Length: 325
Image (cartoon, rainbow, N blue to C red):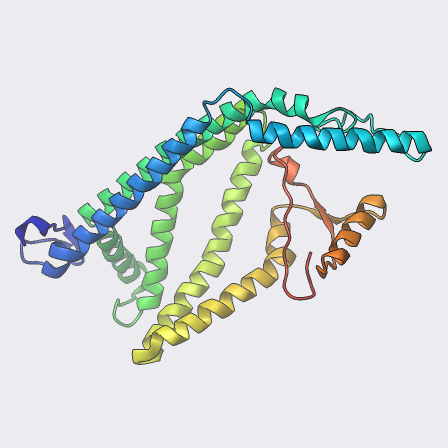
């Protein structure tokens, strides 16, 4: 099928020829490009549909009805409490929403800002994903990955005396390092624009350039340690496992994922944020009471300094079995 013949510019070992790697050139590369383009077009279509909803200026009627009902119930509840002398409205102005005032007018006031933020986020997502898919297609067409593999072999041989056939794991680690660094560089402008332009424009960003760089360095270090270990282990299992290597790789992937999820909240996440136990008080009591009613085995409750990066609201749960936090 001549119409399916696509040969990358570079294949492992040097520039490709008309007869080199014919199966890949005729079928696999074409199928990969077609699949990549199809997924991209479908996801872009969904993003454009989502973006159109952000241009609506009228507050959603269903949400308006629901919030109005909540306001009415809250009004009756507060009236009853005030009559009994049991509680007074919270007149604090620290919160983003004033609990002593009806919710609906406050949400309606924020609606246009939320719509504008959504428009910018979706448009940026489309631009970013468009670049990513073009980059991936160019990499495939020009044989970027075979080229980097040959470069890794050359570095290993020239500077460390490693032979590809006997030091495949070490050469693979060099390959992974090169691809990771290049990926970081090409993605960096998008990360910077998202953080210091879009998030800042809408009043969410609190991250400093120093903290941004520190996060990148820490992320690279963690990827080198854990990513390098997992890659080396998988390659070792593939060689050792024979025809049933996939069973051992699956078992390792399951065990490694479970291990990472176990140590992440204890050792990894504290590298990026500070976690302090929630002080004793009414809030802590209410949360533990709620967890008890839901039979959720909550054992630890922390306050995270996530606001040093963003003013977005955030909360999450983590842990296994009877060690939920």
